Image (cartoon, rainbow, N blue to C red):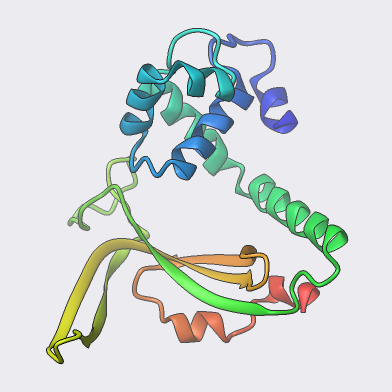
Length: 194
C-alpha cells in the first residue's frame, strides 16, 4: 500500500488508497460480481463504507477504473506482496505447505467474446479465450446428469495448503489451458516451498 500511496503523491485524496484496496477485498469476500454491485453495496451499507476507510461518499466508477489500472500496471508489486504473505505463513505455521492440493477456477472476462479488431484499446480482451468444463454424475434415482459450463476468459490455477486452505502459489492462463499440464508442471515459483 505504501508503494501505491507514494505513487499517488500529493494529488487529490478523495478516495484513500487503503480504503480503495479494502473495498476491493470486501467485494471479493462478499462475492460482488462487478464494481457496480460493490458500489451499490457501499452506498447502502454505511458500516461497510466505514470499515473500508471511506469517510464520505462512495468512489465513482471511474475512480475504481483508475485504481484497478494502477494495480494492473504494477503486477510485480502484487506478486511480491503475495510471496511475502506466503513467507509469513511459512514462518508462523511450520507445517504450512506440507499437504498440497491443486485446483483451478474459471474467471470470466468482462468481454463476452473476441472480435476481429486486434488493437488494444481497453474495450476488448486480447489475451482471453473460450473453454468449457463438463460436470456429470448420477442422481439418487439412478438417472445420469450432465452440466456443461462455458466461458470466455481465463483460468486461475492454484496450489493450496490442504490443511489451512490457503494458497501457496498460483498461475493465471487462458481459459483453454489444461489443469493437468499446469498443475503437475511444478511451477518454478513453487520450488522454494516444496
